[in-house]
Length: 183
Image (cartoon, rainbow, N blue to C red; front, side, top):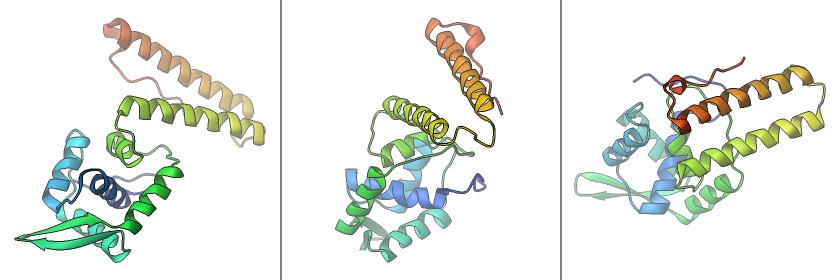
């Protein structure tokens, strides 16, 4: 599967390392094949990283001292180290995610952030973004897009999301599509 492209920011290779640390921290040692299977499961099959993505990510963790590799039979098993836990804690404490294109990695990001409930993670994520919009308008009322334009876009997005939520909760067939994105 081709590597997803998107805006500058964390890329899937970096996410694999963070996600591997989160899994090691929560569940203990991991190895490549089972980790790739877990990623495929968490992305509902939309992304299954190959060995060329998984093992370099693991090696970067080892090189940075965040993980330790030991040979167990034919497998190389990876365990998180104390510096790896400290790094993961710093990432979680300062978490700030932006929008991305590519496969839906929400469940992976949710687990990296330490939230096991995807719904709660998404609600927190939504709240954080709405707070960021309000803060932007307070700090820089003359945004490049224009204050009125930004407010109109946010209100349109909120109305579309509300319609979609209403349709989903009432079981309306008309609400099965995605909420309209305003650009």
